[in-house]
Amino acid sequence: MKRKRHSPEQVIRKLRTADQLLNQGQTVADVCRALEVSAATYHRWQHLYGGMKSTEAKRLKELEQENSRLKRLLAEAELDKAMLKELAEGNF
Image (cartoon, rainbow, N blue to C red; front, side):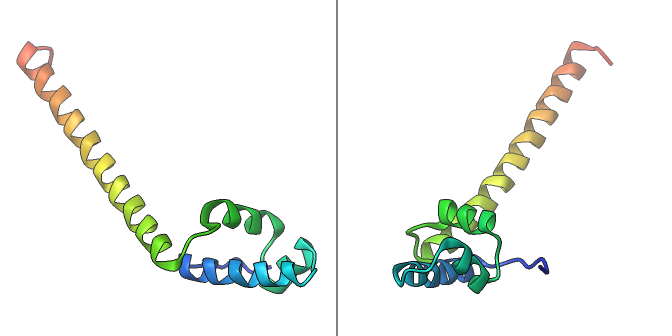
């Protein structure tokens, strides 16, 4: 299969379609074929986005990006602090 990135909204839409197909009596393998994703991808999506609405998924993605940005800023601040501490002690 060709590798494709899906937005959270697309994932939630596909999960809703998958729920409908499963309720009609289709197997998970048939649903994965219809959605054009692997079974592992389907189960990962189900774990991450199961029961979410598209607005919640979009907010989750924004929070994850903000969290990674803040972690990066904290790491830079800690490096600066350690560097200044070394300079103050005279260990250069």
